[in-house]
Image (cartoon, rainbow, N blue to C red):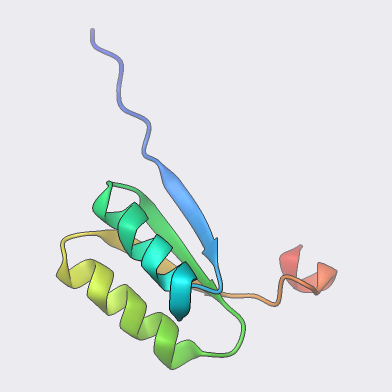
Length: 73
């Protein structure tokens, strides 16, 4: 029986704009499921996710201030 492929997931912080958004888009185009993390720009994160999904990629959004230990937990 052939081994099942393990889905690859990438966490991209600050993925709502700039270089991080481009990284998220590239990872999605390379077959990763991308977790787009943002702290305050929900609109930008949603636009990034919409673009990834429109291109046939998969992703999801999480809001988290990574400087807050409580939020990370």
